[in-house]
Image (tube, rainbow, N blue to C red; front, side, top):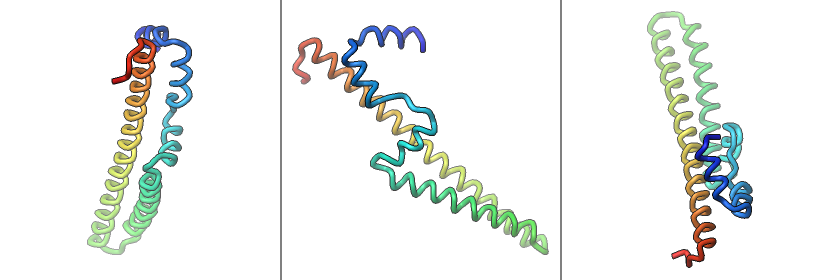
Length: 128
């Protein structure tokens, strides 16, 4: 934690800090992945995981066929298929991790909205 985080933590009263830490805790990467299966986009997360598993199986299958090919033409065809599948796996993983990043940003925005609401209530504002 840096100095700015310490100053912000000291500026908050204990009640609002407890509210924030209950709903918006900082998670590690595996926690983020498991949390992606609990939100609104859980079906998309499941689809992406299944896609990666299927594409990996197809990639291994085409790689085996590439090494077992009898002539150069079939070796090149299977190598191109393997390369295409590996690139598709990479793009699918990038999309999944972009969704995880979006979830982190949304959680941070919600945490800031909560902080603003708590500070507004503490200052006696009407919230609008």
